[in-house]
Image 1 (cartoon, rainbow, N blue to C red):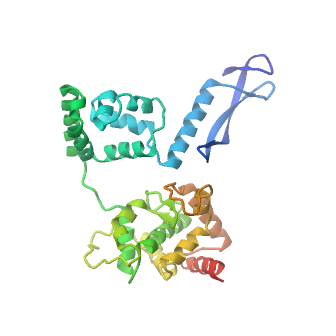
Image 2 (tube, rainbow, N blue to C red):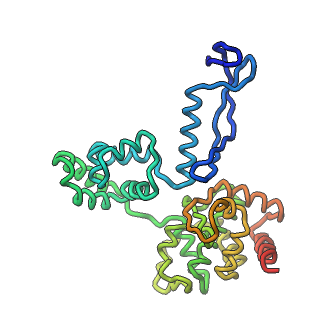
Image 3 (cartoon, rainbow, N blue to C red):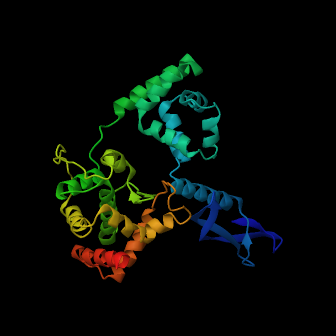
Length: 331
C-alpha cells in the first residue's frame, strides 16, 4: 500500500490502525471507531483518500444511529421495493423530484422526512395512500409500477407476532396489582439492563429513548399513554400469548419484586441518577423533549460496573442495588 508522505516527500508504504474518533455535529459529540494511516518510514500521519472516505462513512452511520435517522441502505431498499425509480417515487411521496436522489447521494434527511421514509418502508398501506393522493404527479406507467409493487409487498407481509417486549409488558401487567405507564417503562428498562448484566445479551431488540421522565420504549408508550398517570387497567387483556422462557421470567419476577414496589416517580428519579440516561441527555435541558436513543453499549458498560460494585451474583442480589439506589436518593 503506497501513499504520499509529506514529511518524507515521497510515496511510501503505510500501516493502518483503528482509533476512536469524535466529531461535534449540531451540538452533539459523535464518537466512532475510525482508521488512521501512518508512514512506515517516519511514523507520521498521512492522508489516504479511501481511509478518509471510510471515516466519513462511519461518522455518518454513527450520527444517523444516534439521531435515529434512516440509513442510505434502507432508502435504497425503499426505492427497490416500490420499483418506480427515485424521482417518480419522490413525487409520489409528495416531495420534490430530486429529494430521494439527494438522500441517496449522502444528504441527511430531517427527522420528519426520515420518519416518513421509515413509515413507508414499514407500512405499504401508507404508501398506497400516498400513491392515490399524488398519482397525478407522475406518469401512468410509474403509477402502475408502484401499485403493482405495493400489491406484492402487502401479499408478502407477514402477520405481526407478539414481540419479546410485548410479552414482557403483559407479564409485568399480569403480575402487578397496580402499575402506571411511567412505572411500566422503568421496569422494562431495568429488565433490559439486568438481563444484559447476567447473560451479556439483550432481551429486547427495541431501543429506549432518553425522555424527560427517564427511559422510554416509544411503542409501548403509545399503547398505554391514554391511562396518563393512572394505573393501567388490564381486565380485558389477553395473557395467553405471553412467550417468555424460564430465565426471562426469573429476571422479570426479580425486577417486579425489587423495583416494582416503588412508584413511577421514584423509579424515574432512580434512572435520573444512572449514567446511561445522564450521558444521553448531557447536552439537553431538563425540560426539553428528546428522542435520543440510550445506546445499548451505555447500558452494558454501566450495569457491568454495577455488577462488580455490588457483587451481584444472582437475581436475588438485585435487591441490594435497588435498596442502595433508593437510599442514595431519599436519605
